[in-house]
Length: 133
Image: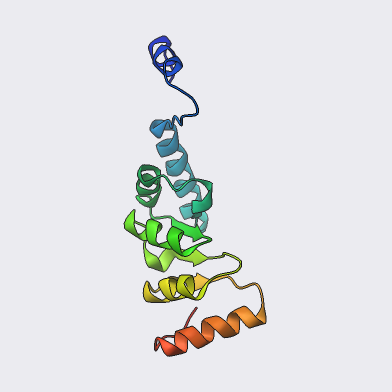
């Protein structure tokens, strides 16, 4: 909750800056988890929306998965507590390095844009002795 004191402090900061109300985020995550669990839904947070480490740690603590669009997002998600088994890699134009990062970390699955992309992933997975989901 914003108080006069909080607003006064914020006015002294140079812009831009980001203010996150962690109480609101916790309550939002709690409600999402409660409702998703009730129906057996799997929730994935879109890391591209905000990859702030503190926020990712909080969101991952609820057991949500991560929807990633780059190899860096996969690495960041894992380092901030998301289980690789809950990571979906949906980026377009995936580089070989990003695909290898995903394979090395045994993510849940790749969302593919084309048959040629599936062939590249399959080839890289074969070279790594893996089967890509």
